[in-house]
Every structure is written in C-alpha cells, then in structure tokens.
Length: 299
Image 1 (cartoon, rainbow, N blue to C red):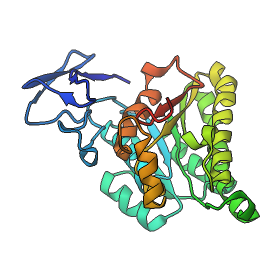
Image 2: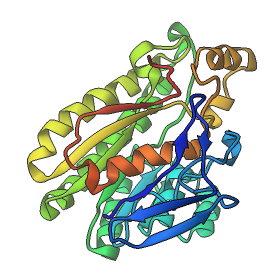
Image 3: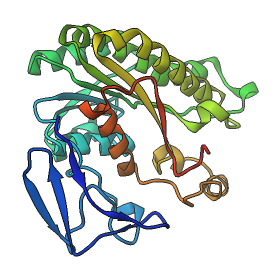
Image 4: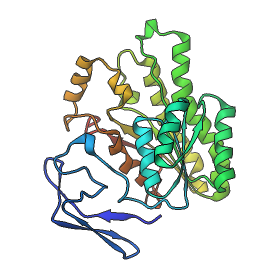
C-alpha cells in the first residue's frame, strides 16, 4: 500500500492552516496539486467544523485489498467504510440492520452483508463470502456494538449477555474466522474498537465497560499470538459523536464534553485516519496497541 502525505500547517489551536497551494506527494513521485479553495480531503476544513470533517481520499491506497467493517450501517463504521472505499478497497459492510445497511452500502458502492456478530455461523458465512469473492481478506475492523444500560443491580442477565456477545463476542468470532485466511496469506490487519469506558468505567454501563475492557485484553493477546504470521492486531479508543453518544442524557453528555481537552466529541469521520494507518503497510511493525482517538480525554 502506498501512502500519500499531505503537507499542511498545524496551528496551536488544532486547526489546519494551508498555504494557497499544497502538494500531496505520493511515493510514486506523482504529485497532485490541491488549490487553497479545495480543502485537502485528508484534513478537516479550515475553521474546524467537525460536521464537515472528511478523512478519506488523501491518505492511503488500499487498491486490491479486501476490507470487512462490522457495525457499518451508520456512525464510525459507515465513516470507516467510506474511507476504505475511497482508498480503493473492496469493502464488505456488515450490520444487523439490513435496511440501513443496504442503503449505506449502495451509496458507497460497497457490498452489504447482513449478519449477527454474536452468531458463529453468520460470522463464518461473511468471511467465506469475502474470500470466495476476492480470494483474500486483508483488513478486519471489529466495530459492531449495542447498548443495554442500567445500574449493575438492575441489569438483567439478558442485557448483560447481549452486550458482551456483540462487542466482545463479535470481536472474538470475526477474528477467529479471519485467522485461517490471514495465516494462509502471511498477512492481515485487525483493528478493534474499544472505549475509554473499558478502562475507567461509567455508571450504568457495567456490561459495556466489561466488554470494552475485554476487547483490550483480547487485542493484546491475539497480537502476541498472530505476530509470527505477519498479522497485526490493534485497537482504537474513539470518542466520536455517534448514536450511542446521542443516547446519553443531554446534561451528562455536556459534562463529558467539558472534560475533553479539545472541547467536543469527534465527528465519526475523524476516526478514519487512525484506522487506515493501522491497516496500512506503514504500520506493519505496530501491534498490540490501543490508540486513543479521543481529543485528549484519556490523558
């Protein structure tokens, strides 16, 4: 995979200040000129409006690669699917919400595969389909998740298990299903999605915190197991403004935002740069890492 590096000046306040003309230099030596009135798609537009952020076309080349993204119908998963698709990958979007998934995939020219990540047969069928279609599987992004919030003493067995089965169980099942293909290829990238809550907890989310903490342990263990096969396993800890964040009461959401050094939740698209980097050849010597993409929340 060939990186494309965009030169832009980063101001002290975190916004980008670009000269009138910026060179995006590919390692092949080909140069593309981006005029000042055409924002570099690898960086948010000047002014920092998070709703306008776009991270996709000026970062990495995934042509000829097959990518699976779970929880892809909306939010972070949708933004990641868009980034990989624009970078040339064959993208397989996985979600349990078939209607929303079909609409999202059609808009990107990606494949929509309705599946329940908590069901082994369903997961195995997705991996088999990707390998049958493309002969390979290069990148797996385990992003699927649900919420079933309640304080621990009011949490039902069913809601406890459902959250673990989707977050942690789905991560396990997809990684297990993909591993034989990764080993046969001698390469592969797994990027899991964990959470600040997995390390610090959050009232009313004992099940979610346990699942996300489990993903961290799973990431580090499988990174050690799969390294000898040329497979890296990493995780991101995002802090994006998704449907899950929207479900938090306004007052509590404002309290959380006030603790973020950058003063806001990220747009889901702002996760794409970190994930695409971890999925790239440039990150071949990085494994077992949990990368916070959280505006400084975890400092």
